[in-house]
Length: 71
Image (tube, rainbow, N blue to C red; front, side, top):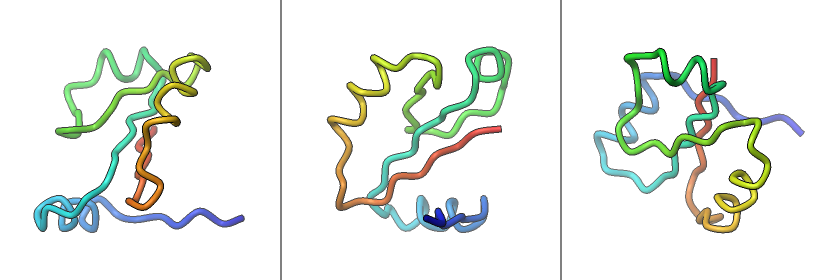
């Protein structure tokens, strides 16, 4: 299954329009904690924490775009 990609500009346009979406920041904890760049409203999800992933997945709106951000 191919996963669609969007550009930073497309994401910004969606955010500027107030479109409903969930943004998951799934960078490694070291990359997340040392970065000064964070997307406002994004949910940080440690990719190594399976329990946390399962809890967040249960709450996701499957009718709204889910955007993941990683490096």
